[in-house]
Structure formats: C-alpha cells, structure tokens
Length: 212
Image 1: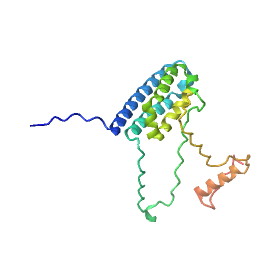
Image 2 (image 1 turned 45 degrees about the vertical axis):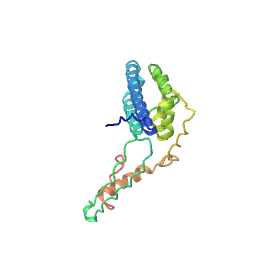
Image 3 (image 1 turned 135 degrees about the horizontal axis):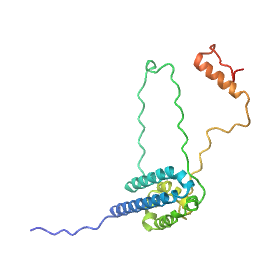
Image 4 (image 1 turned 90 degrees about the horizontal axis):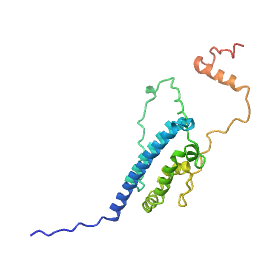
C-alpha cells in the first residue's frame, strides 16, 4: 500500500530564487522596451543617434549583469588569483616594449535625468522602471545583493529617479596624475631625445626638431 505524499510548500530560499528570476525577466523586458524607444528617438534626434551604440551596449550589459546577480544573490568569496608561471631571463626578448595603455572608455552623460530630457520617448520606460524599483520583491533582492545598485544606479540617473533606500555611490577615483601646472617649452625636446636614445642608442643620431 502506497502512501500519498502531499506537495510540500516552497521553502523561503526557493521562493526568493523564483521571485529573483521573475524580476530578471521583467528587467529584461524593460530593457527591450527602452531600446525600442531609444531607436525611435534616434531617428529624429542626432544627439541620441550619437549615443545610440554606446547606450545600446550599456543596456545589454545591464540586463546580463542583472540576470547574473539574480541567479546568485549571495556574495561569493573571491577566487585566489593564479600565480604566474616563472619565466626565465633567456625567454624574454631584449627589446621588450611596454604595452600601450588601453583606450579610455567613452562615457555617457551623468546629469540627473539626462535621457528623459534628451529623448522624451523614453519617459514611459522610466515610469515603468520606477514602478519596478518600488516592488517589495525588488526591495528584498536589493537587500540581499546590494551590488545590484551598481547596475541600477546609472538607469536611475538617466531618468532622474532618486530611490530613498539607495546606498551612497562610491567616490570617484582620483586622476592618475595631476594636470600640468603650465606649458613646458622643453618637453618636446626631451621627448625627442628620449625617442632618439631608444631607437639609436645613447650616442646615436638625434633628428633635428622641425628642420632646425
């Protein structure tokens, strides 16, 4: 004789995971609608057209990051970086040049509500986003994964939304070097001499500046 087993209710963890995935789906639909509204606005607004490619990529990245955080809200312990394999001195070329620094990432405007002012067609998407932020499930997910604010804060800035429970943003990183105090007339000469020493040696040929 078999005993019937009643379906057990979802645990708290399972309910939380289900609601997080539901929020990720709603956020993806919001991003899709925002991209459509942006494409409509770009057809008549050259300013939006200039930002279309950058904004499109940022929105796609935001949807992917939201889904990744919703899948694993808890912060994972960082992995220990792998130690580089030792390289002998003979394996290194003698004329190794330093790698060029990466090109600076082109940023978007940072004023409060800049997208709503630039593209009024996106205002209904901003209202939908504000409604999504006010949901209790979103509040619960943000409490469990505060790093999600790094995904949502740029969108809040686009539409001029100021959530009351948002943590303060991280301070801007200082510049790598201070700007020049003034014009240095000998800078060009020093750079030319440094290039000549690098290419021809300390006693090599030094090209004249501007033919003089």
